[in-house]
Image 1 (cartoon, rainbow, N blue to C red):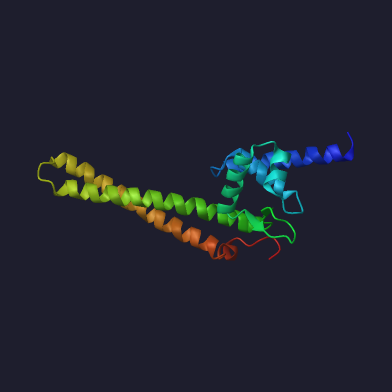
Image 2 (cartoon, one colour):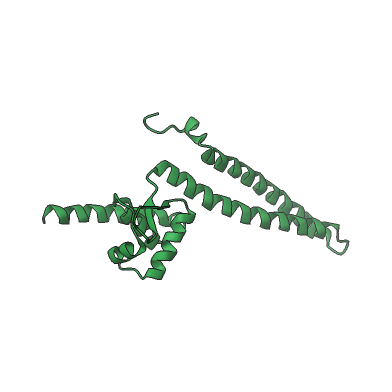
Length: 178
């Protein structure tokens, strides 16, 4: 095996690890592979270049790049004399994780708190209904308590995400060289 082949094998191992790690956050492995491939490029890439390297369709590539843009993991860059859109990996892995974590958790928090708030309201309306039996009302009261507790959890989780977005997290868990 020559040096270039060995380099590719090493990169492939890392790219596959990145893809699997991103899968933990609900991101398709193909998007993780795209990110990993872009990570090893030192110059911005066009969609056509990415498509050729990964063998994906242009539509799939465009969708994947858009997802990475929304997650703030890649940036659209400008280069004099180049008419096509260029994309480059955001190189700060700490920031990448914080952005990914924040985007995913804010979305989940919003969805869950909206559903829980709606459920609490409906359960409270059921408590006021005279046709609901007393033993059912006791169960409803227990459910309301549990849901109010989960709302406290989501308030805490929101504050945790705030520490990521403000970078206060580094006061509690500093980067290695800080």
